[in-house]
Length: 63
Length: 472
Length: 62
Image 1 (cartoon, rainbow over the protein chains, first blue to last red):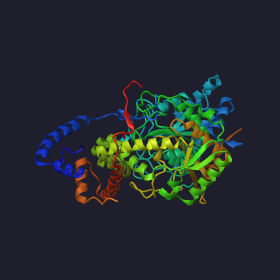
Image 2: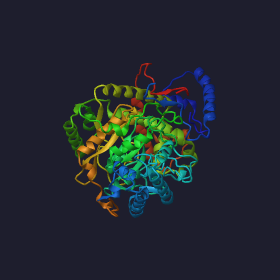
Image 3: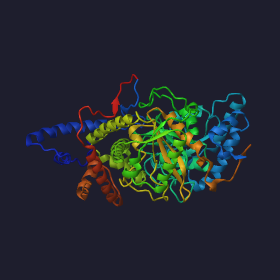
Image 4: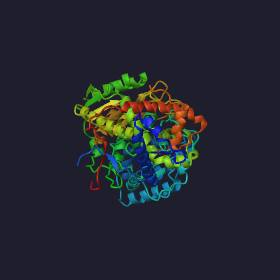
């Protein structure tokens, strides 16, 4: 979901990249869902401080 | 008479405590050496003479008043220029961060200052700890003190060069795939990548959140232990920071290594990756030393090096791109070519591949834990060869010479690089000592025992022997 | 070893990522992409559902 908004990649190309095969009905449904996901990705693509770390961390110890 | 710059921290500390050596005298000596030599070495990108002398005078006054804080009090150090320093630019050696002046110190910067160290300046690095060795950045790359035509390795290149040339007593590097241990190896010093979570990453410019480690680089393992006694603190501001009991690093060095079981990951350097004969001979000689010290030496098997390399690359590129995406798109011209290319590769890792790399990482961590049921420490080379000529490092990712270091970024294990001698050309040879998570004290004990049993710590690069300011 | 990605396909990926590459860097990156592809393929092995990621989410109470 890192598409450049100027040049969105066609969903068919994304499916091909992943090696996924879908029928026409699924494709139509996917198009709507992908739009939602792209909106979600855009909404979290905001300026962040480098101090903001991912919530998942590597933990080698037990407590 | 010992030249001041030949003193280790462990040797200087009692003199400073006894008031026979002044922090002011010591700091002035280092500043004069930096002024005399750093034009050739490029270890520093910013020297802080006024601030350092002011801190030295303060330390002297504190010690004179009976307020000696411990072995780092009055000790001149340098910080890789990705450690945030309040009010002092922290550039990441990049035009992009040329004007980045942090409002607060990194946790480690603060801990070292509170311990009474004197900050001499900010040390050169590969751009954002990934882009190097580069010649298209605002500051030149550091050079190898053993031979100026050679590379000091990176990314903590200035830290390695400064310690070997006697331009700082201690320094801080960071290590995402070998950036403490590589420069330690090629510059012939000791460098510890601590256990992930033992030293705070808060306020260190990130490269890859889950593979980044901060740690000490010094002339000896003993000095690294003195630094670790200050650095190992739980930090609630670092989400990966471990809330564990702190070992007594210096105290641990007094214990014997007799009876320890040393595992040799022989397939790493004999099958998985081609290594220079001189490096292999150095390892074999080191194993003989360990046997003489009463250790049991056995061969062990881990997954092939390439398994770690794949996981490390997929995780590090993804995490680096997540942090740099916005600026890479907006101002790619502010990055040097190598950092730009290497970080951009993260754009091509799919989310599921990243997650599966994390799953594979879990398997590799479990595997090494099993191996550590039978041994106390692992040995393999740090680098497969000695320092090449400056500018001869490959531009992009390469599988032709897999890395011995990033294995232990993947597993988070404590890993120390020490010097195992010198090549025929006079360049340092190297070895890596690795331990169980949070047994960094044992790793340093093994490294220190090796250094004390051999004479490699007696040899400094001759070119920087003057001005020989002497201690009584 | 994976096959080198075509110029057109790699250009598409760059466009998709929204990143600009100097013309003289294009070939270096295209070659490096092949290495990355190979790494991805090796990591894409079959795993049991108990193979959890090494990174865990821990709520703030630690």
